[in-house]
Amino acid sequence: MKLVLASASPRRRQILTWLGVEFEVVEPEADELAGGLEPEELVVENARRKARAGRAAAGEGAVVLGVDTDVFLGPEPLGKPADEAAAREHLEALAGRTHTVLSGLCLLGPHPDAERSGVERSLVTFAELTPELIDLYVRSGEWRGRAGAYAIQGLGSLLVDRVEGDFSNIVGLPIRLLLRLAPELARKP
Image (cartoon, rainbow, N blue to C red):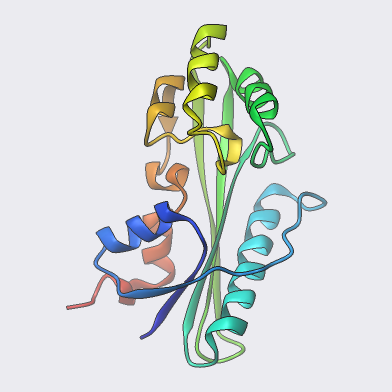
């Protein structure tokens, strides 16, 4: 099976490498939705769009994995902050509160009608954040390109008080969901 990861995320590449999965990377150009659907539907649809764009680039015969992870405080996705001011606003909104991290996965098989998809949900509770801690984190730059403006696997762990659910989901690729959708990945010699 030729697996194509339709993602520019270095974290997703790292997780697949940890699993020992052989894969190629295609950075898809997909028009992602920013809202208008229920949160679970939104992340799956965006994953599907990425997978379809990846298939167009990779060609027929490949199994393409599209993933979309976002942070939700209520029904609306926070998305990735555009600048330091937006990162600070995200972190201030999340401080002392519990938010939901959703990842949609879409695997498109080698045949046009072969699709497997699913959603993983994790809850993350942030500690009460001081202005000094927010400033330290924003200055680190780690928030760049991160849904919700933090990376839990890095310095962002300082912001977190509690996690419920799949940690790898919060990083950006829920391993258990991936292996439920594609158990053949775990059976590789």
